[in-house]
Image 1 (cartoon, rainbow, N blue to C red):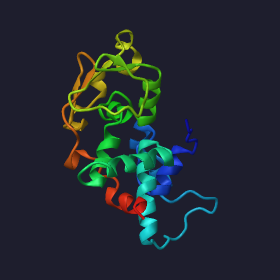
Image 2: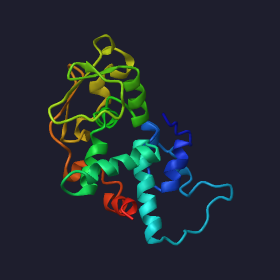
Image 3: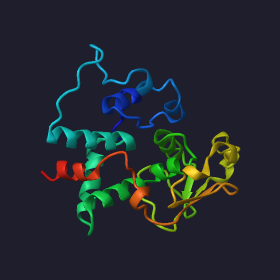
Image 4: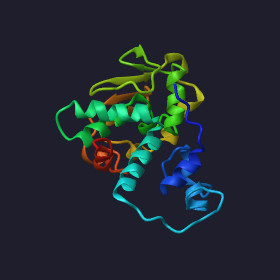
Length: 209
C-alpha cells in the first residue's frame, strides 16, 4: 500500500484551504493556514500565479485526493467506477468517496481525522453488519450498520462521546447511536450532504481528456 508521507500542513497550504487533515488542530490558531497562508517553498510568499483551465482542474483533483488521503491510482479508480454507472459522473464519484468506511467513521465523529479513522479500521476496531472489516476503502451501503468491537467500546476514543461529539455536525445520511456506539447509513449522500469543498465537474473534465 502506498504511503503518503508529505506534511499534512503543507498539503493544506498548497491548496490554500483547510483540508482538516490533523483533526482538532485545524480549528485552532496553530493551523498552518492561519499562520502561513501561502504555498510552501523555501522562498516564502510569492505573487499569485496565473491560473489556466488545466491548472484549475488539476488543483481540484489534487485537493480531493488530499482530503481523502488517496494516491493517484486509488483516486483515478473511483473515476473509472463512476463512469460505468448511470447518472452524473461527478456526483457518483463523490458518493463513492463519501461511502468509504474511513470517511463514514470520520464524518460520524468517532475519529478526529480520516487518517485516524484508517488506523482504527486497520486495527480491527469496527464491524459492518456484524462482520469485522479492516479495509478503510470498504464501501458501505444504505441500511448498513457499523459497530465497535465489543471489547473496545470503553476504550479512550469512544469514552464520553456525548461530550466530544456535536450531533448537529453529523451529516443527515448518517445516524449515530451514542449509547451503543453504532453508526447506521440511512441513505446515499446527495445534494448538500456531498463534499462541497471541491468541484467534481472539474475532476471529471481532467480525467476525460
